[in-house]
Image 1 (spheres, helix red, strand yellow):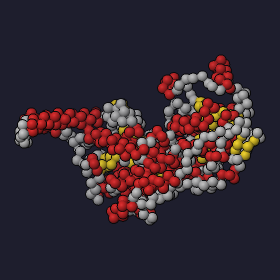
Image 2 (spheres, one colour; image 1 turned 90 degrees about the vertical axis):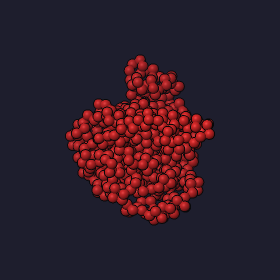
Image 3 (spheres, rainbow, N blue to C red; image 1 turned 90 degrees about the horizontal axis):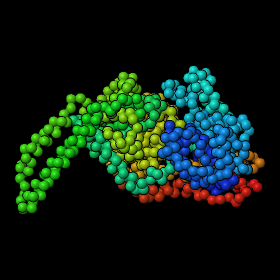
Image 4 (tube, rainbow, N blue to C red; image 1 turned 120 degrees about the horizontal axis):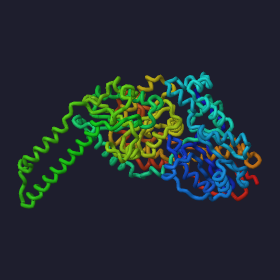
Length: 639
């Protein structure tokens, strides 16, 4: 089910040059309205928060965000100040005196208002109903009904054109919200969504084809660690290794230097987020690693919040045992070092049989005894309230991944978001991601996908799918995504079993990489961060604003649609060190050629590849001013 191209902006290659896309921002006001302005619920919060600086740099004091008022959020995220703009000050004064009312006009300035999701859509609907002179944009980040249908394990994408929309919304008791969403879509001058795959969904669910695709970006500067990101990976990996030492005490018979850390994170939507296919692939990966007698161990973290009542006692005990052993080893080391130092000062070679006394031996024997464990290491760090019905735990029981000694794949469910104050795994999410080797997000329903994007800007390879906005974006703009550490599972045109086999193949191939190959891949992954920078992706939002102004105020603003097709774009090529055949980056079977891998290592030149990639992406836009009183869109001025 392929969607045809139109004049709407759907790829970087269709973008006009910034020099002809400037707006007279001094004569405009820009409002963005969303329930997640300073109110973290999901990914929209990240969109608005990370984009704010880029937009504020362009619009200055003429840019405003409107969201719900929560006292606790105000105290931590908002700096209160008086409005600079006269029109806004008057509106605020009116609201303070009489409640929420709308002023008639903004002192002659043209207003652009962008509304995110159905919760904010009521403002758009009322603005159009009252015929206010406002250029409106409505952005859906995921359709209401689409999320509900996918959560019900329905074959969504193959039945998009067959759903009785009103009936489905009514049966799920969301008809009133669906009507608000659909009305917002059809009232807006411009309708946008975040990815090509969601555009297809919106066209069927909301009965309007999006005008502009606005991919989600990140403030890459926040994550940039220049060439230190490899050192950060090693540092935070060591902290994860400490946790693993405690969690698997008594069963730590695998080499931590040959252990890979994989993770999946996000809302606990078992099927939508792909946890179901991931667990099945892990079972198959475990079989392959055991069959081929691999010395690689894979520890997989599920960071998905669920209902719990406390930490798992066995997990807490494991960290206590680890700390106790560390303290004992440190104490004996200090005592050993002092005796060795004294002997050397006397000019003697110490008798190694006497350097440790009986008390030291006894203490160490007790420490070893304390690590004895009759039970297997737990698969969850917390006590789950719905243990018997929990989807992840139920699947683990079915496939038999119980962290036994024979298993080469170990599983840990951490049903809380990470925090640096946790007594178990005291790490923030960013630190944890940097310490892992691979993020796995085989989502079935993912309008964009910030988790793999965050991995990318931190130089961590990830698995995504062609049903996620991020995966589709990378397929379009990177010639060989796998070579850059972006593994894209086909969940759209393959059966579930074939998709699971492909994911297993990706994971097994990753396990067979040498340490040097993983370092090379991380370097390539980190270089893709420019693709996700708001300095580039912000232009999609710029285009949407231009388009809505030309539709709302056609006598003042004009836009030439054919100019969208006249500019050059860019696409990351396959790295020169990767063999030209697909087998070099995406093996057709679990076996891979060591000779081929060594040849690639010999050809690899980091500086040469980095320079070639830098040439494939345009410089970020620079803000300049348009003469006062002029409105310029695509080279045309109007007084």
